[in-house]
Structure formats: C-alpha cells, structure tokens
Image (cartoon, rainbow, N blue to C red; front, side):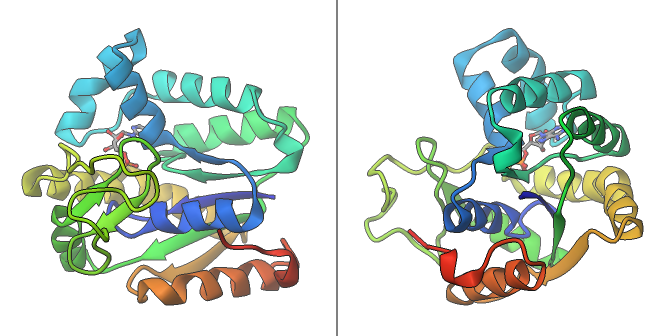
Length: 226
Ligand code: AMP
C-alpha cells in the first residue's frame, strides 16, 4: 500500500498522512521532517538545505531525491508506506516512479487535500508542532492540553521558522508553480482522490477510512486508530 499525500502548505496533508500511517500501521515518510532533522543535525545535506527552507523555496532535487532513496532503501517497500511532501515537482515524480518500478512497486493512491488559499495563512501562523514526535497542533482548533507542551510526548512545542506570513505566501506560490503539475500528472494516471482540508478534525479518520475502503486498500475492520 503506497499512498502519496499532496496539497498546498497548511492544507492538513501532514495530519492526514500521519493518521493513515497510524491507522494502517505502515511507515510514514515526511520529506520536510527528514530535511528539518538534517538541518538540526548540521549534516552536509542540512547545511545545503537550510537557506532554501528558510526562504520557502524547494531544496534542490538531487538532495531530496538522494535522501528519499536512502530512506526507502531501509524499508520493505512491499509492506507499503505513506509519503508526505514528496514529490513536489515533475522531476521528483519521475524519480519516485523510477525507484518504485525498480522494486516492482507502484503508487496505489494519491490523496489531494484541497483548501482555500485564504485559510492557509491563518492556519499556518497558528500552527505549532512537536520537534520530537511530529504531532501537529493549532492554537485555535486543536490546542495542546497543556500550553506549549506536546500531549503525546511532553516535549515543548515549536513554531516553524517558515510559518511566517511572507514565507507562507511564497510557499503557496511555489506549490502552484511546481507541485500542481505533479497533481495533474497523477490525475491523468487515475490515481487521485480529492479530500477537503477544511473538515473538523474529529471527522477526518472516518473520511480517510471510507476512501481507503472504497479503494480496497485495507478492509475497514482491520484499521486501528491509536
Ligand atoms: P513541508 O514541511 O512539507 O512544508 O516542507 C518544508 C520545506 O522543506 C519546504 O518549504 C521546502 O523548502 C522543503 N521541502 C520539503 N519537501 C521537499 C521536496 N520534496 N523538494 C524540495 N524541497 C522540499
């Protein structure tokens, strides 16, 4: 079961990808997290990626494709995985096809999370995330039980440095220019299901289960939510 989750920044693709990973018990690969880890570790890749990320631009393809390949090599691709934040342009989409083809695997489903642009800016400026376990909060719609502390692992929550309004607007522009063609490509391949990025948070698991069920990716009664 290989699922790619696409959508503009702040669409809620991270929340959905994470839920699918938990429900279906398959690994979740988040390219943004891999890059942020590389930056905080101070690795060569991290040093190269940092400036692009701070400006809300795409990190060069050779770097992200290399990091993804490294990650996938350590997984059993036949067991499946959920991918968030990759591919973000056509070159990356072709690279992913190539990697999967070599392993006799293919993308089963592309979820496209749709949300209005004006919702994105408000949403991202109120987003907080856990640097340790990746849990995502929203100060208005899904605040942590204890101020600034992650409900799941107790770490102190952070606001991402690229969740500033000017950077957010740039990231949205980059999405339409670079990533929208990837979506069009998958639509032509018949792989895309659209979902709203504006559903109340407690309705999301049922919506995801329904889609997975319809696509016969996992019988609903075998899905579990942590
Ligand atoms: P995200 O957490 O998915 O919003 O990603 C944060 C930032 O990481 C993006 O604004 C890009 O700078 C970088 N990034 C994440 N995924 C990719 C990718 N597939 N290709 C290039 N840059 C990426």
